[in-house]
Length: 82
Length: 163
Image (tube, rainbow over all chains, first blue to last red; front, side, top):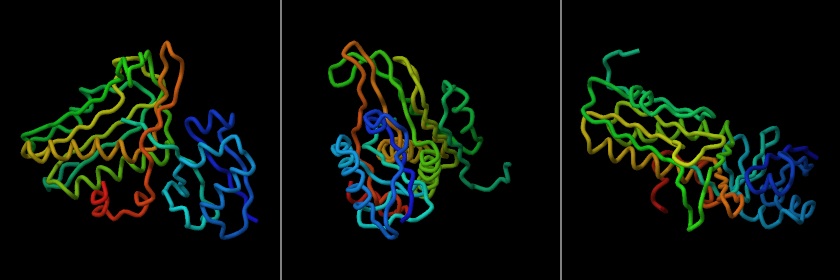
């Protein structure tokens, strides 16, 4: 199992009440599996989790991509800068 | 360092401090440039019919800094622009305060206008920054534009086709 610290932002951070969530996943787990696992652990966040893009190592990676071990993972809701 | 070559020089920043627009304009000053286009964004007093008193910008800072740098690099590859500055604010901003500045200087106006427009449009699509609005009706996060996974894999040429 690989342990990830997952960073949260905006409404998701507010709803979670924390800035990061810790999660353990099997080696080779995908982005989709990360989000499923988080939704199971925190059903209250499921709505927000459906809307995020996932960054690993500050790059957005697709749902079917494996999470690279050792990279920072971040859940990014739709953005509103500018 | 000014070597006399027509290389693009860029400045990008994500800052919690008030943005000095004149200072940013001076950063793109260049004797080879006949046109400077400056786009500034300010906090508006209304959004979707609701009164806004102030906003808070939250950023995923390390990624946002990287995206700002990528935006000016990509724009520099698309237009013959000599100077770019791209600055975004974080933290609490009252109505009227500057949230973003795009400054572009080029030998001629056409490329300066086009590059500036492209930069602000792409910034709004790609920058991991979120705005929370506060007004008489309460506080709410604005979450508007989904980030796309192709952002992380783009090669600088393929981003616009699907947009």
